[in-house]
Length: 470
Image 1 (cartoon, one colour):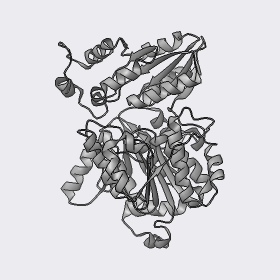
Image 2 (tube, one colour):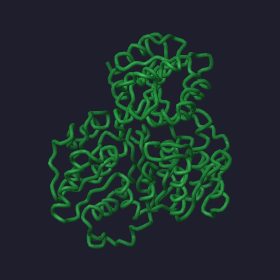
Image 3 (spheres, one colour):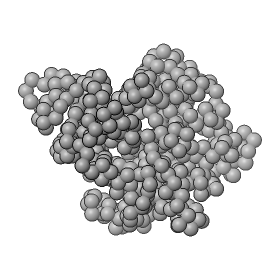
Image 4 (cartoon, one colour):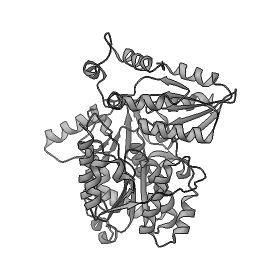
């Protein structure tokens, strides 16, 4: 049997690959259509990495775990076909279905919301692994230098017991039959995970606590409107077993959520106060800090002062306003994963606060056409705050570009994606580029008194880091 991980470029999937590798699984096959920093990391660990779909032949006895972004790729389709033809149950799970299976055995703490999920998850894992004796496992969607530049953390002393749980998931055997007392493993240890509301995936999970950092309409390729979006969170909250922590201002900012906040005894509204982090920039991180502090006071017996001092030792996440380099002219270059107008706004405020008087330039790679169309006014308002704005080609992910172009009301003559983005940029007095060479030239020529931040969700960050190594 091989454990076939499809979509290995994604931080969550590569994290599962890393966890399984650390738990001594040697039968891992990691597949993706594109080489990336994460596939390079997996290969460096000695894992079998295949770049290109359709090159691996799935077998009846394989376990297949896949990212939703590649749900219809060759390997997943073939696995379903084999299972149907043989009328036999195979392990075929998407990322969140797999985490659902894992969460059944843990005190599961999940971090949700439109912005701040990764930062809150990383901060809580950092604090929990130092203060919680029962912390066993954590996974998120960003690489963290403090976690050996991985997206996960395992309690090394508990690896044998964690592997027992994973063996049960893959084989169907009861933990007791594998030579351990199953009752000692179930819901006794903590599991910290970043969640996602796309297609209501977070409803799979077996949850004890959750933090909701913010709510703003997202994943508009799936959710019809804000009412639909909030309804997913309402169902999510109804399944939490212990407590839901939200910012106290949530009631006023998300009016459609007001009734639930008022009536649910499961929800705790947390006041947001400034936390003087050394390495995390700007006020939006006070939300992540306040919610994590409240969570930790409920999970551990340490005094609040010790919890807070431990939190303050957390440094930073990769691609969350991450400083990369200073060019030969003295301009500073940053990279960020932000793809919502609000996250780009947070970045602007952080840079403006940190570097007053500097010229701020942004290179933005939109992540999905639906997001841009739905939130166009917000993107225009935010991006126009920068001194210079450059629009790069769309990272479409799950979208069919040509079908979307037909449906989008644009100026006459728009026939392809390049024309669509050129039109978008021109209408807002911005510049459109479609090659990485153009990005590298902008970085080279940026002047001393300027800051350049690149917001990207595709492979730009990978190309950027390789370019800067030269």
